[in-house]
Image (spheres, helix red, strand yellow):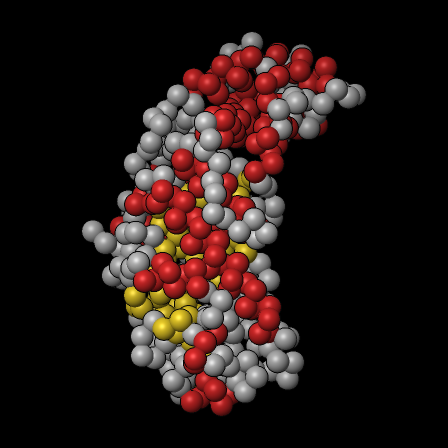
Length: 418
C-alpha cells in the first residue's frame, strides 16, 4: 500500500523536518534540491520585502508634526520635543530613535507616505489588518491575500525556490494565504544550521522508508506524497542548501545589531537574497506597537529596533551589490488617536504613514500631512487610500497587474524611480 499525504504528516515530515534532514536527507530529495539549486549566483530580478508593524504604530510620533500646536496641546505627556527630532523638512521630523532611517533619508533611500488609510476605518486589530492583508474592503477569512493573488497572477516555473517566504515565528499572514503556490515560513537562521539529519528515535526508520518509497513513485501522481514533498518541502530544503553554501564561503553578514529580533530576521533575508534564490517576496513582522500605556519608552525602543535593523539590511545589500533590486515596504494596521489617554499612551486610531526604503524609491515626504484640525471621531482623516501604495508597488516594482489583483484601478503615487 502506497503512503498518503496524511501518512506523511502523521510521521511529522513537514517542511521543518525535511529542513532538518541536512546531509542525511534521502538521496532523491538531495539530488533534486542540488539540481534545482544550480541557479545563477547573482540574480537581478526585483524583490519586495514587506515589514508589518503589529499593533498599530503611532504615526504622529514616528513622523512628528512638531510645529503644530494642536499636536502638543492634545499630547502633553506623549508629544516629542522638536529639538530631539531628525529633521525631514520645516514641518516634520523623525522620532529621535530613528537615526537609522534618517541615515537612509539623507541618502534619498527613504520615502515617507503620509495619511495612508481606507474609507470607513475600523479600529479593530483583526478587522483592520484583514483589510490591509486582503487589499480589499470586503473581506472574510477565505479571501486570498493581495500578495497571494499577485503570486498567482505572476505565475512562473514550478521550481524549487519558494515564490515567497515568511520569515517569522508567527503564523503565515493572510496577505500570503490562498495562493496556489506554496509559501513556507522560516523561524530563523538556526533552522539552516541543523546538519544532524532525522533524529535517531522511535519512528526514524519508518520515516526514511516512507521517503524512499516516495522516491520510487511515478512523478506527479495526484495528491501523491512526492507531489506534497515537491510543493512544500523541497523548496525549503533547496533554500537551505543555497544559504549553507553562502555561509561556507564567508557570506555571513556583519553590521546588524544582534540583540534585535528584527535585525536577525532581516539578516536572514539578506543572506537568502545573496544566495541567489529566485524568491521575489519576503515577509516579516515587528510587534509591540499597541501602546495604550506608558508609550514613550516602549515606542522609542521599537523605533530604534526598526531604524537600526532596516539601515543594516540596506547597507548589507549595498555592499553585496544587491540593494538596487530590493524594496522594503513597512506598514501598520492603523495609527493611534491624536489625543493621548489617561495612561500616558494612545488608543487605536486610523490613518498613518507608510514607509518605503531602497535605492530606487523617490526619497522624501509624499502625500499631505495629517490635518489635526479636521478630525473624524477624534482621528485625522486618511488622505491616501492604501491600495494606491499597493497598486504602485504591484505595477511599477513587481510588474504584476494591480487592477487584476486589487479588483479595481487605483492611481499610482510617485514613489518609485523609473
